[in-house]
Length: 231
Image (cartoon, rainbow, N blue to C red; front, side, top):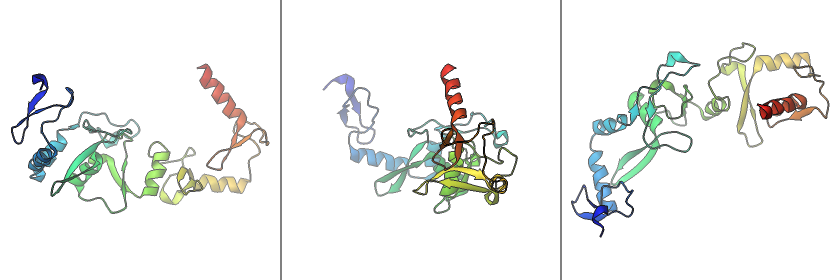
């Protein structure tokens, strides 16, 4: 047993050898690990104290919504997408993991409505500021995520409320993008477009139809790709 890799168990006090020098474990077995976590999760106050010790509250406010205030950034474990993960003690030596932002919301405002997701109004995945989180339906959450940030109006200034917004879906029912109903109704009254916004005439050769079913100009698309490659 290499003395450099020997550590004393934080629960039973027995000496044990680390499997790798980089290991950070403090217990000699799974049983001691369960016991240690059970001791740490004795009161809600202690659990809350551990949770907030992994939060940095000196983040910046989102540029598009400064009224929300500063983001509270999670510095603990995260998923590949940047969302924080936290362990929750379920009793009887059972533990589970949940989203750090969900845990923050539940500790501040109570339980999340059944079937609802939490939308980050700040569009920062690692943010756990409960005031930046809003319970929404899964469909609404998909729409907002597809647009990259919370849109309050379309490019023509029409309000993007639930009554004035609809979504494009693929064959499986997944949300691809959202669009303004007011603008769509105006386009229907004017009839089908014969040219793009830059004046290129729509023909079979110059038209591209994407997954959302909308018609796009192939010439404009080619010009954008050339500009990106030359940049």
